Length: 320
Image (cartoon, rainbow, N blue to C red):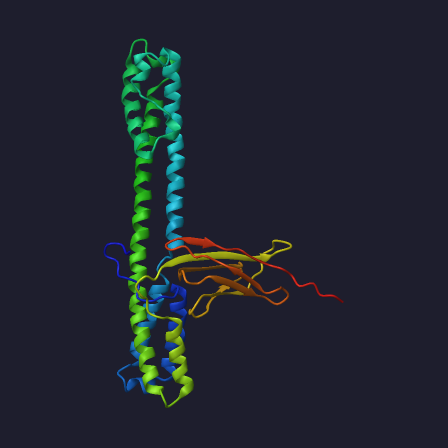
């Protein structure tokens, strides 16, 4: 299922894997450019394709876009808390003045302020402002409880800001969708060039140079075309010492699955690893690091979801 306006993904591997495989393949084409020129591939074509690959790699990841939604939501909720407090204060004033059964109180229809959805809170804030303004002007109204024009103005300022931040959350969600569309579109464009280069390389060197032929063949094997029914999810995690919980950097993490090429992720200096759009057929994760016992575990990558799998490496005790 794709979003409206989104191309179907044409390759199976993770985005980062396509980027790296294309880097390797473009380097091979550089080396073999004289032979490729006979097939209409010039150095300028390779250079342009590299630019396209970098643009693809630089599209913000889905994790980044989700993070922006989280930041926008947190900011909106912080302003919402201020707005709830403003309304709660006026509710307290009205309750003290008239009691909860008096029409001057029930006209607000406060309800459970803490449980209101965003649009309900906005509506209540507007209503509270109108009624509180009227009751402040009454000869024996809420002024005696401490209500002031400044308090009503503060409520309205918080409501306006809250309304703006609701829009910012929706904008962040829309941007996430747009980046997904752009990421797939640019990835497909890179994949199209990648397939062309690999097919030309295989054709040139078949029966002529087995080593070069295998390089282009293996590249294609590791970036197979998508097929109907393929599903993808996201994977991330951290590598640490099982005994001390201290991060273990510079570890290669390998994913394997039935009839799938190994997918190698790297946990760098921060000991974190991640890959988006991992085929759900990958069902095992392993890691090897000198000084630690080999690690292997089963995984389930949820379609259109995310799995966080933290790896705990057990140190090998060296007996003197």
